[in-house]
Image (tube, rainbow, N blue to C red; front, side, top):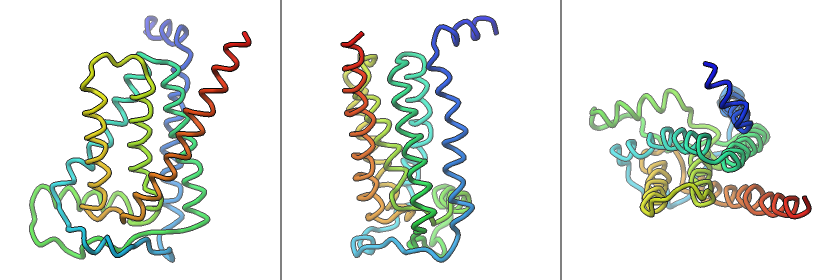
Amino acid sequence: MKKVIFWARQNRHVWWSLLLPYIIFMFFLPERLVTNDYWVSHIPLDDLIPFCPPFVIFYCLWFPMLFFTGLWLLLKDGEGFKKYMLFLSVAYTIGAVFYILFPNGQDLRPASFEARDMFTRLIARLYSADTNTNVLPSMHVVGCFAILASLYDTKTIRRRWVRPMATVLTVLVIVSTVFIKQHSALDIAAGIAYSAFLYFGVYVLLGKARKGSDKTK
């Protein structure tokens, strides 16, 4: 325990991890407030995308990818961890406000499953845990961009295959959202635009500001 306390004192960025309960709260807040009377997110492309239950595996990869990216930065790159947590905190704060002011959802989920297997059972659990509201922009997309932004920003990754592999996995995670009918393709487009805005603010503008302040010291 003493070693942990000593490490925390030497690595002040660890306190940024306290933002995690706040991020979780901002996710569940609109889930409780927005349940019906929502604008339906839908474009014709959605009708051409088949329902592919096996893609739920990639969808679920999002959670460990977020966790292990944060853990790596926490242990290896303090500044990177701060930017990662700031990206997610701002994303979920603005996102929650938008969901509440502009209630939205999607009606793409199948009424029933033709086959009952491990994939459809997992999807059924996801459907019950995560409502079909608050979908635009897709926070799954935003989380993927947070992962990629931090991995390409940090200088602590030595193995060349890590970033390309992470890129492929995040693309699969993003497309999985439409293949399991958790999102509309419109949600993905909005998520990409929203992520670009967040990236510019956190990694470009803030990065330049920090470099400028370092030069004046």
